Image (cartoon, rainbow, N blue to C red; front, side, top):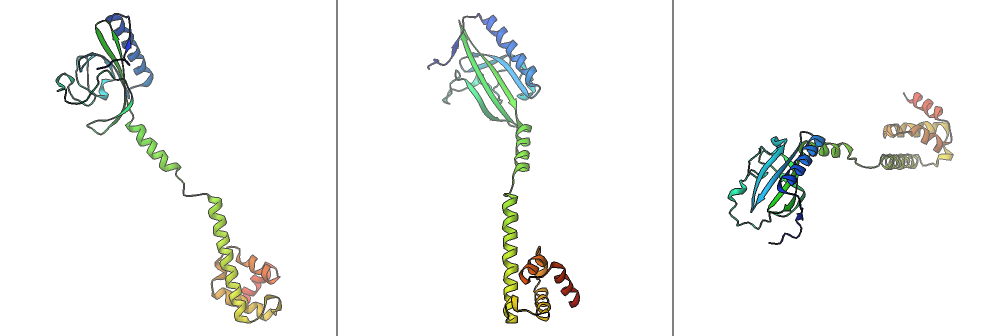
Length: 222
C-alpha cells in the first residue's frame, strides 16, 4: 500500500500529539459545540481516540476505537477496499440518528507512529436552514414581465370587445351620434367591458370624448 500522500514529521510521538491536541482543542473552541475534533493513533486499520472535544457529535470518548459510523475499527475484517492512510476532506456522513455531518481527517507519520486529526461538523440544522432560505428566495418570474404581459392582454381583449360592439352598431366610431355612443356603452357594459383595468379611459380615447363623458353615459343607463 502506497503512503506517498502521508505527511512525515520528525517530531517525537509526544510532540506530535501535543501539537495535534492543541490544534483540535483550538478548532473546537472556535467552531463551537457543533464541531467535534479529535486526535487518533492509527495502527493498521485501527483508529484509537487519544483526545476528543465535543464528543457528543459521534458519541466517542478517549480510548474509543469506533469510527464516526459507530463501527469498531479494531475488528475490521479487511474485506473492504479501504485505505486508512487517505486524507479525507469535507465528506458527508449520514449518522444512524439522521444527522448530517461534514467530516475531514488528516494524517501525519513520524518515527514509529501514525496519528490523525479529525474535524466533524454537524451541519444538520444549517442544511435545514439552507433549504428554508432556498424556498424563501425562490421566485416565479419577473414582476415587470408579468404585469406588462397582463396589461397587454387586457388591452387586446378590451379592444376586441369595442370592435365587436361597433360592428353590431354598423358604424365606425367617428360616425356615432350621442345616442349611438350611449348604445355602445350599453352593449359594452353587458359584455363586462368595464371590469377591465382602465377600460373607461381606453374607451374615451377610442371615442374621442372625456372619461367623465363615459361615466355620464353609464349614469344614463342606470
